[in-house]
Image (tube, rainbow, N blue to C red; front, side):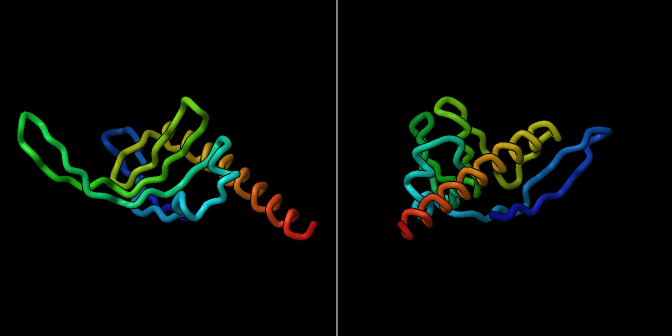
Amino acid sequence: MSIKIDAIYIGKENRYVALDIKGLSRDKLPREYLEGYPHAYFERPYRMTNCVGGQKYKKFSQPRMVIQCSETMTLYLCTDFQYTPEEFHERLVWLERAGERLHACNQSVDLKIFL
């Protein structure tokens, strides 16, 4: 996974913006990993068709990392969205935990191959 970020200042407040996000999609990750928590995956942009007041319109989602922290807590890291330092740090902490879990799952799979 890679995240390209930029720091911007709005008045005296610092914000972070993810300019580019790359990672593995759900279909490229082990099932064992996705069945536990935390886990994270990349979601490519997709076209959505919404209907509001009888009017149909289409818009495109932003590329994003979906961070499933627990069964009841999901965070998103989206491109072109401004995050406070605290919000950004929280996402990075959960991404690191999810990455450690993925590493452990991959080692477990490697061990099963040799047994």
